[in-house]
Length: 379
Ligand code: TV7
Ligand code: CA
Ligand code: ZN
Image (cartoon, rainbow, N blue to C red):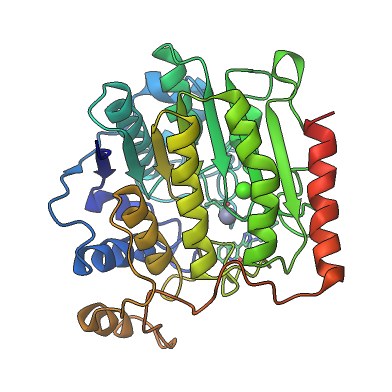
């Protein structure tokens, strides 16, 4: 039987606008939904409209005093602390409401799976993986990934796997479940010596009962499709096969792309599409087909995120989009009205994700990164 997929969406997600010139611009979500719609990817798909997460949902992960600070910050912005009021996390009007709505979206996606109404569920506005129990960080106010996982645990789930392919370390989700063997967190990311937040070392493998259930795969700057996929396939499938999660939760940030202005990996749209196909395959083979898909980072607003996440939606819906597909003229015209950047013309960057443009020296650097992780997780 073909899997049922729910897509969580409301135009109110676009109110998560941190500041005018902030890299996390919600236009990327608008452009993604327009592109997916115009390509027919969402034809006949009923979207689920979320409610804001309740305080009960949020306090499974966050402290009550942090919720109070987020609620009051727009009205008393001086000395609120909790990581609020920085360039990364400016205080904005309605920030509790906008952040709770995104977290509510991820809980709704989890609920659709838990109640058996869907096998897969997608919240592209989610993936805010840096928020900590009592502080905002890295553009993230509430950690919707952790809130959704904590909700699933509350329902009685015993094994949840979290795989984070965003270029940044999934530090907030790792911290929330660091000593909990029910949640295996795996993050692939650019090496902590070279990218904020500077964590995600292979030696961070969990503590107490959770020892062995946190996994980090740091990759050297410059890693491209083939190197990234080589590292992924050397580590992730065998872990998921032995853990046998009841749900696979994925954070699918698109900031690994070579055009991304915030980081230095060199993936293409074609490599990212291959990642999404591998995640789908792993959900089918190791998690009984249960797949909760979250968005994340991605700062090439016009050239990358809409195409990459349209492939992600298509993958979750089993309606794979041919990479050769040209971009619809209406979409290009709309995007051209918003940017002076040159726009792509097709759903591909013309890369074969298995092609290795590099020599033995680079292969060796990627291999030693893989070995470092394997030594830490498979002692
Ligand atoms: C999930 N990198 C989030 C990734 C969060 C990365 C950072 C910026 C940045 C912020 C801006 C801005 C920026 C061009 C880039 C140490 C600092 C250096 C702020 C200027 N332009 C995700 C967080 C990271 C904010 N933070 O994983 C407003 O780059 O490196 C840092 C910290 C201090 C703060 N300054 C940057 O993808 C969603 N921030 C322009 C305007
Ligand atoms: Ca990551
Ligand atoms: Zn990121």
